[in-house]
Length: 155
Image 1 (cartoon, helix red, strand yellow):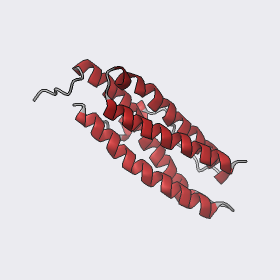
Image 2 (cartoon, helix red, strand yellow):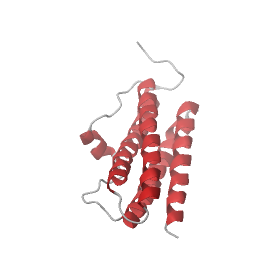
Image 3 (cartoon, helix red, strand yellow):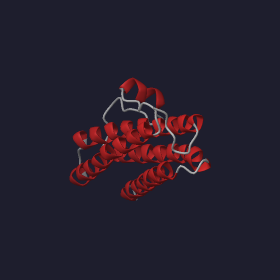
């Protein structure tokens, strides 16, 4: 059945492509954050362990919302590690960093997702796709606030 939501197919495809990159960044950050939660050590253990848990729980909810928006636009959502690796600007960890470095790398990753979301915002904004704009605005707010809070731990 054809999709007739007031956005042309080529624009929906462009929007879905931007959302796919946000989804890949978000999922990769979810994995990174979960890894940090499991493996953090040192004097800040309790604080970081709980903070990372809060973050990965929020990210787990976000990936579902992003993927469902891609589906609502009429396109398949990426869902494999290979697809995420190809699409994501957030890089995986090859080793377990020390707690302070985890914080720095988490800040960088949250800022990366915020930039990806900001870039993806242009296409839906240009065609009045308010649901996607709203979703991306919420994602940017979360990642920018989280980056600020993490940076505050470094002062």
